[in-house]
Length: 167
Image (cartoon, rainbow, N blue to C red; front, side, top):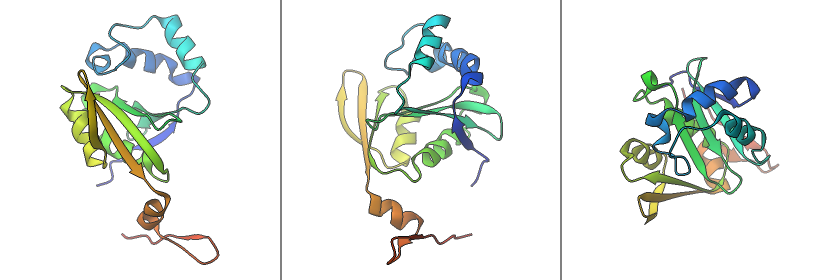
């Protein structure tokens, strides 16, 4: 069921909203590297110094910012819905699916043992538990190029991708 979720790159206009979300204890309690509110200047420094090979996408629902999904070059994936009134509506599931669409490689996530909602979210997308370090469960998901092609169509003899749309 389509829920009108879209993704767009985070930009400077999102910095205030992301700061608010990242300072909400109901959200940052699930972050591995944050256990207290952020200082504004540290947040701005983080935003401006993010690696070029990291992608932070704003989740919009239906056209209003609702959260963030992040993809790092090493395959690390993170996601949160910052607007708490939207929790439990399947928005994160659709956003994660869209963020991974068209990408292949090995992806990973670390999820706190008490964060059952995120565990279910990642498992629904095909991530498998591969270990645990203290209170953090490691998840992995490998998506091969041919699986991605089979999911969206098939390669033709000339190397172009033929996509079939099912309605």
